[in-house]
Image (cartoon, rainbow, N blue to C red; front, side, top):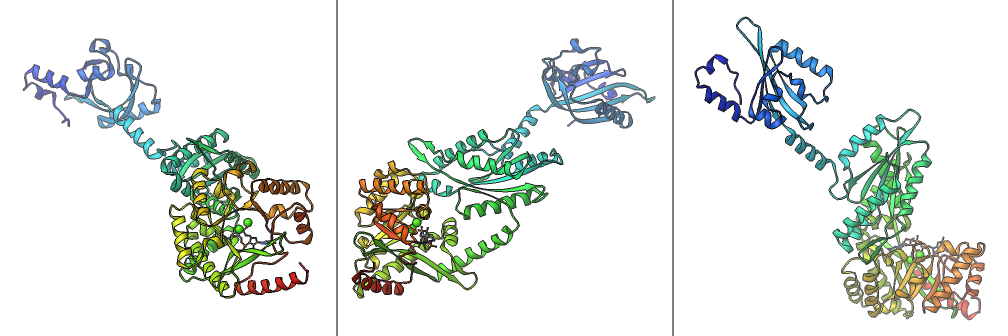
Length: 574
Ligand code: C2E
Ligand code: CA
Ligand code: CA
């Protein structure tokens, strides 16, 4: 701290002492005469600016000017100096080596008894280190450490700038990008691999998005992308499509091929809102809608989503209660062998009726259960119910029917999945030989090595394995031989058009041929008409499942169906 000093009092001290103090302070000192000609500088001045006294003597302080402050800055500085006799502030100056640096400067005017200015006295300290630390802190707090992208806080600032610069004719879009089931990637492959995927994902998105767009990491596996100067909604949709397409190429990490998908929600400035929070909120809603609609797609925000998201919240709450209360039932849909004309098995399909929300389709609540992790307790309830029904059928002398159970990806990926399902089945006195596990194509394509060994273990324990919804994922027929599977279920979307579309016909035919070569039996799902049955029979399809024979029915209804089937069979009607 420096005190205001009166020159007279210096006379009390020896000249050498004053000089020593003058030169040993770490702050630069510069004294000028009344015409601003430099008369004296100290050692710190030289250290900071690079100029010696000889070099600056009789020059004005403008020798240090960086050009960073404009005329008005100096005008207001002089105004203050004239009025108050002192000025202080931060200022950018230039060193002898041309480097520009910030300093904190205090200038004091010195006057004689007559009030005439005799000197100016400047004391300054170099604050470049402090400044760069501040900048570093700002970067640290505004940047995501993993991807180097702006984080959600600096995104807000950047987005504000972006919309300030937007012209009346153009508008901006906000994309909320969420990687589907990324938690499972982290859980099964570890955070380190998860992190590497996020970094790679960032690079890929950056590569395909416009230079003037802003990509930020919002948190975890959520990203925000702001697009400016959009001409139409289609532009934003197009970018979303490109991101989704870009993900169809696997991430190769070490020797693993990892497939990811993303769900993207889009809101628009100014149509959907003026405030950043509102726009993010709406893009998030739309993203959730896309996710709930089957993932791997994008959706624009629309007003009805407000109501929809309320329903989802209600559904989630009701779902939790229903699991507690064991409030589900299981229906069974028969599978008919075309060769023997017998019912060789049934598929267990969960049903939920709720006072608050009415009858909810599994197509609606299963994705929600998967998203929230509730699928695991729910699935265990279903397995128990199936085991109990099988025991009951035994008392009715029906013991040759196998039951297939749908297993969600996140459930299958649990480390203790095999142990848990073995225990459950044993606990209920059931045998794995009578159970079939349906795993979707996407589930088994996730991380093949780990999955193959799990499948082998399950098979050796007696369970049968089906690939569900075949044809909707990424797997190709050539991968099939790697998996120890018993059945392959061709997705309904192929069967639906099998009598009209030649390409669907060709696909189904080659799936059947290939499967048979690998000793895998083929189930056609969603068969609704006699024509479909006939064409599938010609193609040598093994098993038919669909409304044509029966809708999913409760256990009691299944018993009736089986009885009737036997009668019809004996009468030669099937
Ligand atoms: P999925 O595994 O592909 O099940 C077949 C779906 O197709 C069932 O719908 C079934 O009722 C329906 N279906 C069967 N035959 C026909 C037909 O001829 N025409 C038409 N249009 N549809 C037919 P559901 O019961 O609504 O189940 C939908 C999806 O929900 C299932 O698709 C499955 O992915 C999931 N799901 C159902 N129950 C469970 C369960 O217990 N656990 C798990 N993890 N998922 C389940
Ligand atoms: Ca199924
Ligand atoms: Ca299916």
